[in-house]
Length: 202
Image 1 (tube, rainbow, N blue to C red):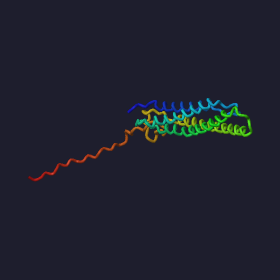
Image 2: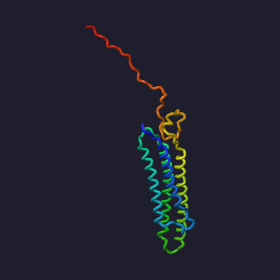
Image 3: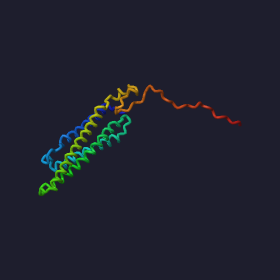
Image 4: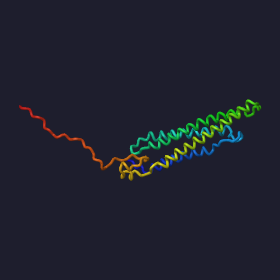
């Protein structure tokens, strides 16, 4: 049996690190108060690409653990944390994609003459961007809270210590499987009594 001491700390660290990456992106995304506060189209596209990469990283983290068939580990809670975080992360991608589309519209007609209809369309587009970016920030905050919350709850009791605990004392949020109970009575296969084969008369 492998010694998995320290694996819980590694899982916690990865959860915290992933949360930090989402939090860093959230800090880069602000809700503009005026059209002049909008990032240029290149910056906006780069941020969407970063967000999409972070979402892909969540699925990669799930896949890596789902393929880990080590019988000594129970990574279901960690997998659940990453999949739960992927839900608001996916919504953030959707909202930012719409914001980018509206930013593209404003960029396309930036030099167009200021007529009434176009002015109204620009204003409506800017309001959509504000709304969508607010959603993006809320979604990213939910991702961060989900990952950090699970990391805080993850139990780091070493496997050797867990082996000394009863099943009722085994932490529910441990990534280690409960080892077999050494005190539990073992079932042995029933041995049939030897019966000699009947002798035939000659």
